[in-house]
Image 1 (cartoon, one colour):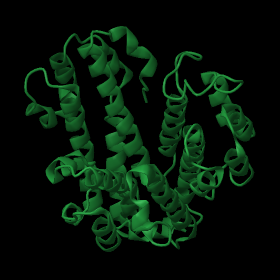
Image 2 (tube, one colour):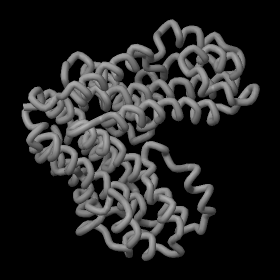
Image 3 (cartoon, helix red, strand yellow):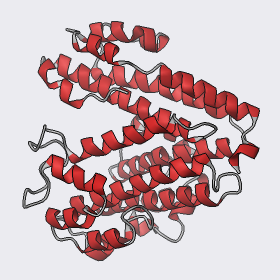
Image 4 (cartoon, one colour):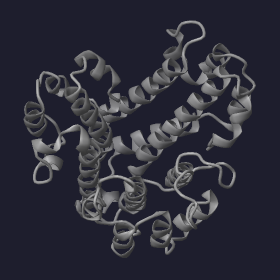
Length: 364
């Protein structure tokens, strides 16, 4: 059981993470941000929370520069925790970086296809998905070289082997490649937390099983919705679904056979959370997919907004448990939502559209 392996060092790290969580912006902080008139005002309001990370920004910085500095703080704190983690927590934190690595590798593949500048590509990669040999990938002059480098030089090698060949790495298949890698990654992570000698039956396994099942279902639903009107066959679509989750196997089978949004709604209606998402966003019943990313149903919230809200609920609940690595995952997700909030507020202020702010802010 995890309690036997939960050493003093990892307990110390959990304490730090709980402190990070308590330092997240509050409702009052967001209230102050919504009163700002310029990006400089936003920067000033954020100074107590982000300190030196904002000091190097020029006057009236861009919203992207502000978001990058906020992300720098998250990465700095994550790396500090990672450098002090031991045993199963160290492995757990490695798993948390693999999703970012997949996005980075997909970006490099796309850049190689379009012969983009290597330095530009590396600058656009997410720092949590950085690995020591990543610059080596940019030396590749063609897709076959890149593929061979990925298999040798990156932690993602096991997710490529047996699933993808270098012929798959072209522009038409890049989203299939990304989703295949995510499928393999989620299945591996789920298997590890439920079978590893230190993880199985632990509070970490319990929380992360819920987290990963939700993520598997979210990806299956989004893959299905995004496949409509494309050349992706039902058989190819089914191969991209993770082989676990609350929808698996019956709901996944129904998703693989869906021809439209109404078919997706029927496939998920056995899970009350997902049924409510579709009801609240107005999806289904012939409404089309316009409200997936911000349509006019309900209160203007999209399906993706609902997924983020659920993710925040799970993350907040993770902090009610003791002696669990899952608080690291939960803190990262809450911090990322804070950065999205800051970016959204800044963009609204920059565009003189402050009335749009309220509907899209998650406070935790």
